[in-house]
Length: 521
Image (cartoon, rainbow, N blue to C red; front, side, top):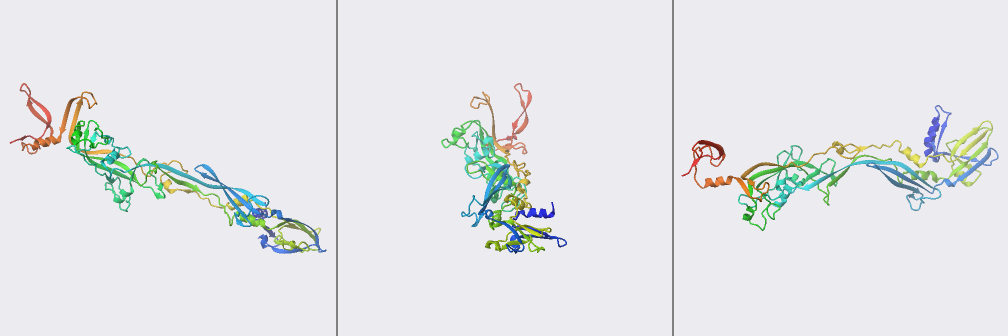
């Protein structure tokens, strides 16, 4: 292919543009001009001197009434293809006018296939539960600590554990103390977080729910606001007793409203009394919550995206461009003249008009396609006609040839080590989950029982040992003891070896729980 042919090919998209070379100059001069910028030239007809012949046809059939371009855009969403159709119509009344026909005679209708956008997304669910260990009733707090969606303390599930003092009166479950599990970052007020310090009031108001299932990721949002999470330690100190059976009519372990404290005390055998015991769990809090229907919170974000090919609608679009190109009446034909010497008064950069013929020919500004001078016959042939031009689809491809389609990858997702093509997230921002444990317990009594039927607390008691610290205090309070050895307190019972006589009077030894020896007045 010659250079001139390549340029002509590229200019086919403009049907009213000519390309020409002037080889009389060094280097040759290249001309690329629109018909509207050609220099008009008038050629004489039937003048009896140089005019030989004319074959000319008016091409009203090429004047478009409207141009309708339908863009068929193939988009890709998470691997599934979604096809959109966008129509761009241009006619004598402008863009998408109802006065312009959409189909029919002299309506250029064409479909252009474009590559659309490509989007991949990532989604995850997070199941949350309200943090009900603060505020509310004893029953509400107990239920939260007992629940697998709360503190995960299975022993709080029934009233074999009853919140009572030594006198069997109901005790209050305090509001839980919530402290930071780790050091680092700043709270909602901008203050530094320190492990072991209680949550600031701002953080308590912000992180109101516990993450039960699922994991928090940095890309999650709620109505555009970021979802955040925080690892904390939740602890509570309670005073309670343990029983061998569940209290009648009391599923939450508090004193039933229809029973007195004395009746509750006899509703089963109390096996232990704890004056102070700390229970705590490590959990993850969040500002997110479940959906209104109670279903887990579902977050979706764009993982990566690539824009589609460009197109213009209305002003400046292909439909307007083609309509304007086809609006001017075109002519097809050939003009020939014979001269003694070539006058060289017509070229490819001239708009052709004729005098001596029809009135419209004098200003038609027809487009020349070729000018051939025959040296043997001294004849000049001027070919007039419409340029071969590209289709609308080829024109669109050329316009998109150098368009940037830059992929975008969500940095928040990539920060979580997720792959760029969407799907499952590989690594969470943080990992939650309760780690419920009991702290040190301060027992006031402890009872071990052997039942006639194993594991049946309703059967006859065969044997029982009671360790009741309060009874030691009651015995000592009834007298004024004088310690034999002041370094050994009377109220503390430790294992000691003691000497005694058996039935025969022989000296024997035994180990028992004894406090310091004392005398009484």
